[in-house]
Image 1 (cartoon, rainbow, N blue to C red):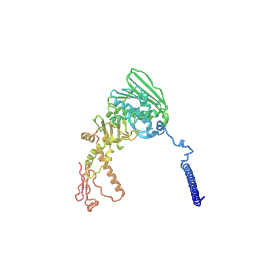
Image 2 (image 1 turned 90 degrees about the vertical axis):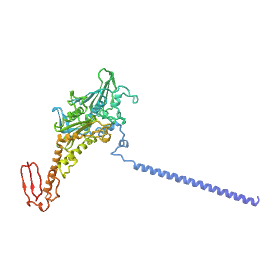
Image 3 (image 1 turned 120 degrees about the horizontal axis):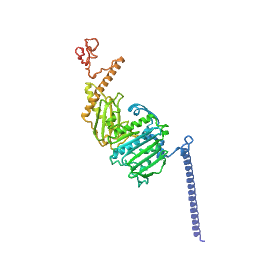
Image 4 (image 1 turned 135 degrees about the horizontal axis):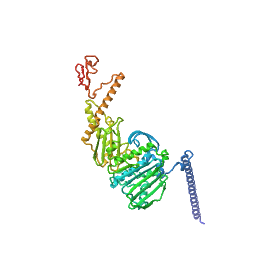
Length: 512
């Protein structure tokens, strides 16, 4: 082989050897990189597992994760957290007005009761009152409270519920209304309604807190009856029979008293329930007769109802329009008192409807009281309010409340759907018949006197007190002529009124 060719072949071999070596190096590097990546991935996964193990919560009191984190059905949640829906299930003591069956009168006394039990009773009454608003043919509500059996029944006449299967939900309408949560005919807020139902709980809450719950509704040749037991957990089959009598709907239930810490319907609870029936009789108008335990509740008007509470003297009743009626009297000395209803719902904690009326009264009475008290008087709004006792019965469109218990209305006055402007003549009559202005002025004077006594007993020279109602200011007090026994004389007589004349510090008492 020629030398030149040998050198070319040798160089080619060297190049091939170098290229092969480079490829092997690249392959080796790739292998090392993969190993490093896998090692890092494994290390990262190990740290993740360790972190996850460290982050997982320790069992609470030996409970498993499944025991610690739970999900409840809506019925289970209502029974577990009843305060959200019906109020407290604990016994509490309050001073309340109740109906004394034996005495035949309303009495204010200390009462032991369970708010939740009272509320599930009230839900059924409000149902009947709502039907009265919707159905002009209805004119009777009957309530039975069977203490011995622990049974309560509310019946109203008028149109029955439709006895037919709901096409969407595939159950009879009465079952849907009384046995399925969140069902209501009040969800259309574009429709202005003056009823009490709103959120789709209502009578279902009564069903849930009862050992036994029975619904009957009759109309159009049929009577429908269905029963639930064990806190609405067991549902009986609907019974439908032929019927030829008048239309009606009744709800009968046996409260699960053990859930309220009772073994029978206690006397205070029954007295409070009876009072609530009288509420219904007083607010349902003249066209509906309300019966309690087989006897007609003898109330013909809201004014009759109010007379059960106050003495019957010194009050003024007014019905400015079809949606509002009120009665104003003087408080009996225990501060501001009120008894109010929104769409037949009792609102013991008042709300915007009461404040709407009270503000108008306070404005007018305060102006009169300050004028009567004289120069320098400073009577506060709260001092006027403390002398008011007001009863309000109103119909409000789509009312809103502070909670499901509906004890206080929160709807703004601009959304009431009506107004209750108090006329000047009505306010003048309130001032004249209740003598509230004199009571407010006397209270202000008594407070001022008490403040003066307190200042005097302290032995500390305080600031001058001016503007005492019906007295003239002692303008020389604290000056040269203001000392005791300095150019002063006092003339006494049988005193009716007093005029002070600061001429050389002489004080003249002129009397008739």
